Length: 332
Length: 283
View (cartoon, each protein chain N blue to C red):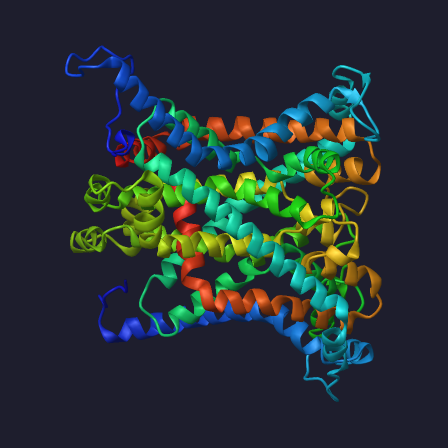
């Protein structure tokens, strides 16, 4: 017994009887149905789990965001329309969340990614111990955010923390700060920890991208008299474009949902100075049991990242994804 | 893939030295926090204040031995291992089945369905956590490891399916056409031919799933109230709260909590990195 679908090519028109080459439409239809049943058996388990636990929650959040609800018992009843959203849009904490996300995104794009890119290009050259450096630089990425956060909360603590002790040791006492408790230093401190943890990941991405560029291109440019900078500017960087765009995408999406590090390092404080959308959502949803209001924050996070992702795919990564999607479609 | 030497020896040596200087400085920046934790764990709190940079004098292994002797630390490690393994088996199993269908069958709406799965890469997990909490409570899965395992597996599906579909699609069809002619069922083809061939790809996605599960904090934080189910990250955070004045002991706890992840990284580094780069570029 053969299973036709396994070797069948895709068809533009699935109606039975269209193709004269097929003698018995009923038999064809039966075989096709069996093929579909097979496909369903393979995909259904994954799809049920995905639909129930990834797609449905977004719908639930959208629904509960329209109610005033403390989360107790059954489903919400006190329908208030978009009041949660208007309250959210008027809230200073929400504005602060957006500002913090924006600051971290700008810092990441201007500092973290160029730094990782430069490092990847350096480590792409032949040097002793290169593998060890790579291994070491990537190691922080493997540690959980919580472990990183607890470690750095001790390093940045005012009295016994390593940071201030170092400053004291070299006679720079006036630079000592309560890094995580001072509204003016908390975001830079948070960003420093993020950079410590994540630069290795972006370095690895850029290294992989760099190795996809044929070496001959750079050599040809060198023969034509291009300086190292010109080679980078006109050969390497343009060809790294797809990798750079993906790195920026991951960095921005990651910032929108930043939670673990902030929660462990500062809890969002002092006085909301380092709060993010996810932290505000958690505060209201899990600590103050204002589930409806917290759901509104979830919905806003979802819309922000969805709109951003679609716009980014459409306008920034268009050329990259076109290639990716079509080759993927052709693979089969 | 190393670069060839393009310059005469003189400038290249100067360049080599400055390269090492830069890489070495960075290595120090990465290592110092880790060493501060490792050595700090061997000090007592008085030493941490008076002797922050030097070696412990005397060494205090008690911080480490007491954590290692405590049942709760091992309980958390066991919970983390259990949850990571269950998540990995579930997500890799379901993804392999789906990826096989996406790679090998032609059916209407295939690309649309695949896009629905890949769109999951763009959903911030934080968006779902609150409704998931409500759902899990309705299912009675709070304080139940299944509550974490199922959700982690669901959110792992997009990346795993993308990577595995890419792999299956690259396997030449001729391999299995013979088997089909010999009467092999689709599941037989999947189970006896493609799955064994996919071992390297399965290893890669498994490593990704294990690391993601091991480090997950947000979800267990929402699901587990009962300390008996806490995973390592929850334990670390809780420990810091409980012993906030005992910095040396917290450092020891943090360092011990790092060991499994770093050990796993040392063993599975190649798979982890190839999976992350493949996932990022294909996603």
